[in-house]
Image 1 (cartoon, rainbow, N blue to C red):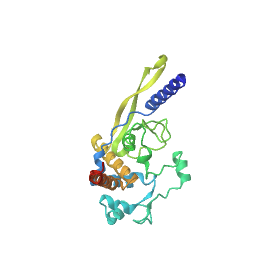
Image 2: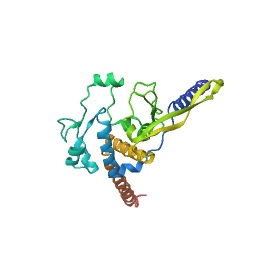
Image 3: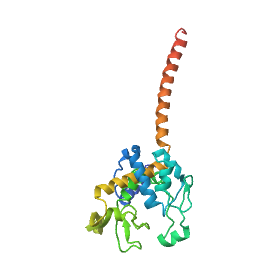
Image 4: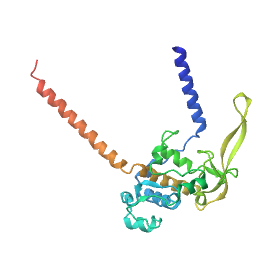
Length: 253
């Protein structure tokens, strides 16, 4: 029995180490963006301009953006690009799945709940997306010419490269366990500048991730706010019930 427990613990430790090696450390997403309306609105603009041509958000309607301070007129003029689409429609794309598979090797995933689906990979889903969108680098061996440190051999090209510029990944050969040579990642080296500085790009990526996080659960803030009041009510009711119980039984011996 002791041997079995030791084997299970060793297997879990090995699995954890393998996952830690497989997934690079994730950068922390600035969570305060989730409560900033201008950040969410800028994120919605970036999503509509750079993501919605290939990725759908088929469980979200355009007019739900009213919850982040955008009027239907704002959405119709600035964020509605699909031919014939209406403000009340779901955020779908016109690209056929067979064409997407031929161009990218796979059908781009729906992004409605992408922030929630990536939770647990060394951090929150927002941490994953924030790091992923800042980790593209030039790799001429890939069909698209791009690779990603967080998602190696990804089929998606770097659609934000004009904003960020281009960079290459720097690897150095080091001896690992058993004396075997390993390629160790040392960082990114800028090659050409984009239309944004590094700080501006990181800020805009944070806005985009904030919107993706909001879109995955638009009622999250209302749910949390309501939950606080429910807890306060239960605490107050519990106190009254305790005092009532004490008063009822005080003369009973």
